[in-house]
Image (cartoon, rainbow, N blue to C red):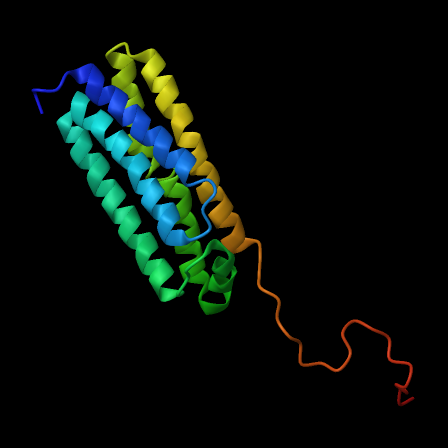
Length: 180
């Protein structure tokens, strides 16, 4: 690790965060979205590893915890695409809440757990006077946050169409006679 210049490693971390964020924007399969998210998170991890190795350990452990949780949730709901995510509400509201909080945490939304390592990395960059890199890295996190918010929206605010069992759906029945 000491053989590579620090600036090159920081630049590779920024490129990884940008590539992962932008690559995941157009995806509809949850596995591909999480793969691009991993690329983006590895950019943050590489930046942390370059500046402060104990911070990189914290970042890795936090990421592993969140990613394991979201994979368990997606496996439980048998979700393959983001359009399938609306079915999570029918299975378990607790699972939906866990999935929602984990997705937003992976995106780095404050005050959730995933925000903490990113904030500490940005703080470390500012302390080493790499202000432009910290701004660019923070901006690189926005596309990832967008596709996680999109996944959260599809999970919580959309439901798949369901067939009703009633004969008349919200219509007036002219043949109905009230027993008076």
